[in-house]
Image (cartoon, helix red, strand yellow):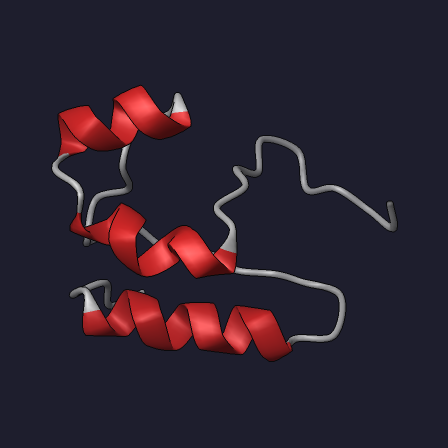
Length: 66
């Protein structure tokens, strides 16, 4: 493991679109943390930046603006 951001949450890229489509209760049950608010600032990271760029696009498609 190269590094970890304290309090970071892991959402695998292949699950991201489905995760953002869940209602807050379903999200909490599946991922064990609260679904981010669409007004919240989100930070995506990965080793090279390709997956995090894809995650940003998916988040925007689901109404996240920051």
